[in-house]
Image (tube, rainbow, N blue to C red; front, side, top):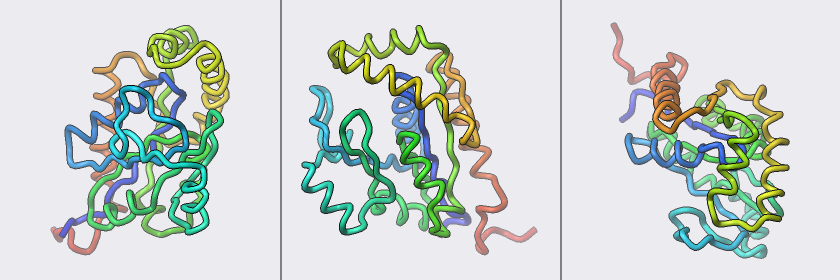
Length: 204
């Protein structure tokens, strides 16, 4: 049995900030569960269903909402996104850390969640791109979206960036290596928080 409750690491940032790469790399490099989100948008060419996202129809998504299956859900870029409770709470109770890549709307919903496990586990990080020019280059360099979609993502990104002060941690992106070093440092520190320790922790 784990000596602590798992960390719920909620990571937000605009499209192109590198947040998804950080979350994926963390899940691959340590004992962290990556929470796969649901979405009503169509898969991109490189995306694998149930690995990148759970792809749902609008009717399926609405049914999940009605059944109370989501920890949070929001509409972003004209599509619906949501995080399943089943992807999160059970892992936390077993002492497994969970990382979530979600937008500022979803993060705000989880921040306000009254569930005791969520409140104890919650940590939020905002990933800020170096500057607007770099962000624009990252968005256009993906090669997966048309100009209209890129313009919409840029507009929404600038709006999201205004919410950084609501987060516990602000990670200023510079390079992939440095970003992950800082990101890992946050996780290491949060794993040692006394408030997460359970009664099974050793007495000294």
